[in-house]
Image 1 (cartoon, rainbow, N blue to C red):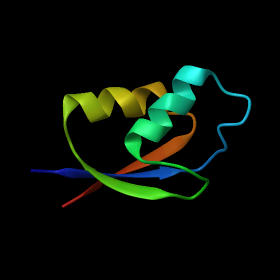
Image 2 (image 1 turned 30 degrees about the vertical axis):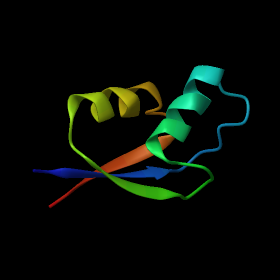
Image 3 (image 1 turned 180 degrees about the vertical axis):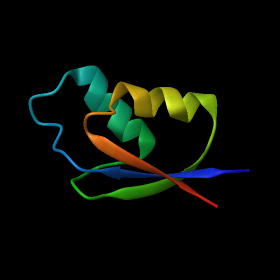
Image 4 (image 1 turned 90 degrees about the vertical axis):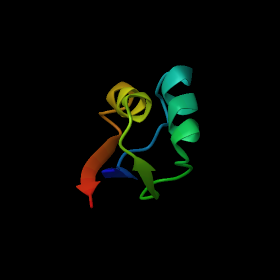
Amino acid sequence: MARLKVTQIKSYIGSKQNHRDTLRSLGLKRLNDVVVKEDRPEIRGMVQTVRHLVTVEEVD
């Protein structure tokens, strides 16, 4: 199964509480944190919510 590498590239300061909670749920705590998650619809939806704060790469 494919995996997604999610990197936080912008600070969550000044963003909505929902966006902060989504970043925490993804496992991102601070700037330049990187997590690798399974490519599932739930994770894609979370990434879509905070797309302006993160970058996403597909990893094999």
